[in-house]
Structure formats: structure tokens, C-alpha cells
Length: 79
Image 1 (cartoon, rainbow, N blue to C red):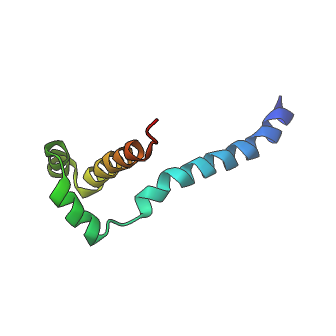
Image 2: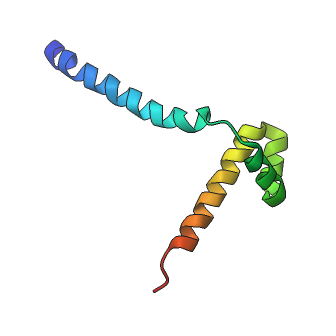
Image 3: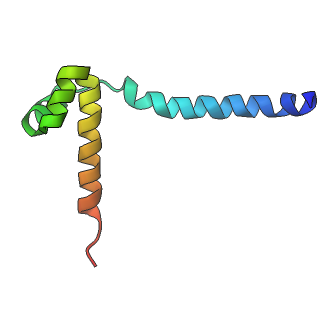
């Protein structure tokens, strides 16, 4: 049992670190002034409420997610 733990622990730690790197990547990217201007001109009332309640980072995340889903929907081929 100890040998199994010794063998499996390092790969599990490495896998965890790789997953956390992907989670942290969007958090390290700063919000550009252009994105803020776009946000203010196209934000929904719910996103403005998020801005007031939770701050710019969470509101921008919600806005980016909405924009990404809209881009994906428009890029799907029509058959």
C-alpha cells in the first residue's frame, strides 16, 4: 500500500498543478481599457448588477462568458 502511494502521489500532484495552472490563467490576465469600454456599452442589466455587487473582475468574467457563447453560436455552420 505504501509503495502504491509513493508511486501515485507525484503524478497526482503534477496533474493537480497543471489543472490549477489552467484555472489561474484567466485570473492573471488584466482587464484592458478597451474591454471595459465595450463592457459599459454592451452590458446587460444583470451584468451591471454583478459589477455593483461583486466588482469588475466577476462582472467581466460574466460578460466574457456571454460574448464567447454568442461567438460560438454565430460560428456554427447553417445546414
